[in-house]
Image (cartoon, rainbow, N blue to C red; front, side, top):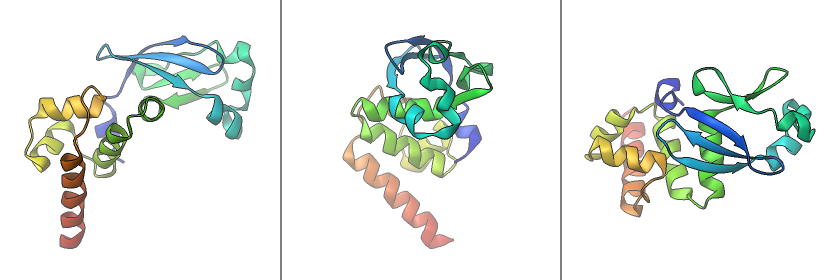
Length: 150
C-alpha cells in the first residue's frame, strides 16, 4: 500500500457516537460512523481504550491522518475509512480502495488505468457512489495483466 495514495484520506473531526463508536467527518465533508468495539477489545495496543473515559478523549491526529488518544495511541485515517465503509455494507468501495492502495495508485493513476474520469474514481474511493461490478472486474483484470507482465 502506497502512503501517497492514502494521504488523501484525512479526518476533519471525530466525535463520540456511543460506547466504542465515533462519528468521523472527513475533509471532503462526508461523515461516517465507525464502531471500534471489536478492535479495541482484540488488539493489545488499544487496551487503554477499553476505559470509556479514555476512549471519549478521541481527537484528530496530526494533519488529520489519524484519530489519536492519550498515551500515543492512534488509528490511521485509511483504516478508519475502511472500517466505516465495511460496517456500512460498502464492500464494493472497500475492495476498490484496497486495489488502489495495493497498487500504489493515486486517483489520477487509477482513472488512467481504468479509462474513467478522475472525478468518478474519487466518487468510488469515497464511497459516495457504488462501484459497479464491471469496474471491480476491470481492477482485477488490470492487476492480473500487470502481474503477468512482471
